[in-house]
Length: 419
Ligand code: HEM
Image 1 (cartoon, rainbow, N blue to C red):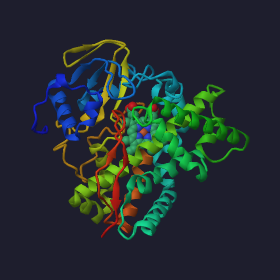
Image 2 (tube, helix red, strand yellow; image 1 turned 90 degrees about the horizontal axis):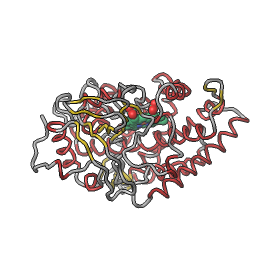
Image 3 (spheres, rainbow, N blue to C red; image 1 turned 60 degrees about the vertical axis):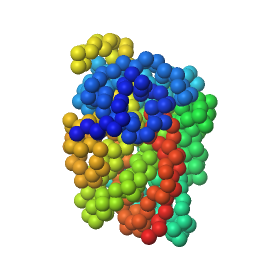
Image 4 (cartoon, rainbow, N blue to C red; image 1 turned 90 degrees about the vertical axis):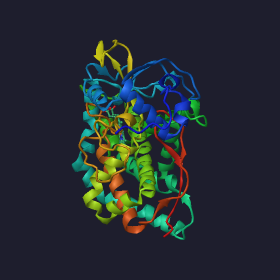
């Protein structure tokens, strides 16, 4: 069933790329998406300048699961190389972005092949002891410092730490520099946050790029067993990556690895706090429900709100003609609540079957999240450690959310291990 509307929704008064829409309640956004799915599944939005630092361009909004699935799996018609962003990309940010996520075949496939073997389920499974050790250290630390029940910030003390150490480890960033990476990626992905702005994001991106180039030079001279070494020594069509291609690849991996799973862990604990029955079901038979539970967390709280594609040819969708060159935004939070696909989509259910597949990692196709296996494993390991050592760990305050139409991020939220 679609959510019952308790407030009348006037689609003409809503703009999906307006800061007002993202400042409103999650319930309001769900009602708007439900109305779009029902009555206007292919809707045109004009350009908009709102409270976000950057203006957005015009776009078509796709909100139904099947349409997002179709667009994601037809890269010849819905391409990524023109842009994947709703917002206008200023030059000072744009220079750091071209990487595989906004390329099409064959360049995309060549770049993805360079690193894909490091992200297979088998490779990620091999990291388990390492991930478990990190999770254990995080919980040791929480118990040492906050075991008396005092409140702490879940994001910085728990959720950010495992993804950060995992991706930094894969890239060969030494532990002494992890804090810098966290600081810089936070800046890099927050150009729309008034406290950061385009200037702050550009500064973060530049710092990561400079760092990557320095680390890359070291790996060229002395190879190590890490992804940076793979990228520095790789040849694509007989040629090494240019320094720019390499730096942008590094930026993509470090930011995607850091900024998403942290929020998945944060939202996951929030959902378990507000749904104690689901916590009990999962924690009573952890391994049995682990795969469905971590998928359900991402279904309920997709960490990336949208990705865009640009049409390479005219397309007819639900009686509407979309023209070549126009931009289409794929709204994952809406697809994940599509009542024609998921039964009772508003319900958090750790036993919900993984098919039909939720689209928080993308809806398939060539750009499907490279790090999905890693993210899933990080979540399982972190929640397993929580279950064993701090089963009552709970959120105690309202999350301080980052205002963004791209990322579903929490800046900080208080928690405690009180019995
Ligand atoms: C819960 C955590 C995560 C979520 C929800 C998530 C979500 C996504 C989404 C929605 C996409 C775009 C899919 C598309 O356009 O079709 C994507 C792409 C990508 N993700 Fe993730 N991601 C997560 C974690 C990670 C991690 C840990 C990494 C590690 C490096 C990662 C690396 C990437 C990369 C490299 C791409 C671009 C792939 C390509 O263009 O071929 N992600 N992710």
